[in-house]
Length: 72
Image (cartoon, rainbow, N blue to C red; front, side, top):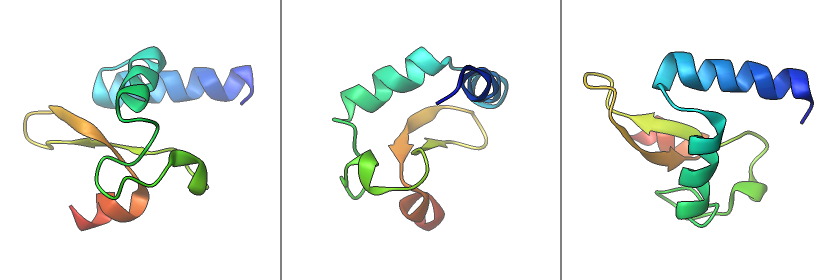
């Protein structure tokens, strides 16, 4: 990823979810680099795993693929 896209992603993660890119990466490592629902490895997807969160409280529950995020 380029420095510019890293900065944009960091900004978006902080603004929307209140986490840094490092915190996102720590959560990804804690989940064995896989979707928290279907357990498929993140490298099998074209996009990054989504931050799955409670829309009312903002509490982050984990990371999941786009497909699982739509089902939740």
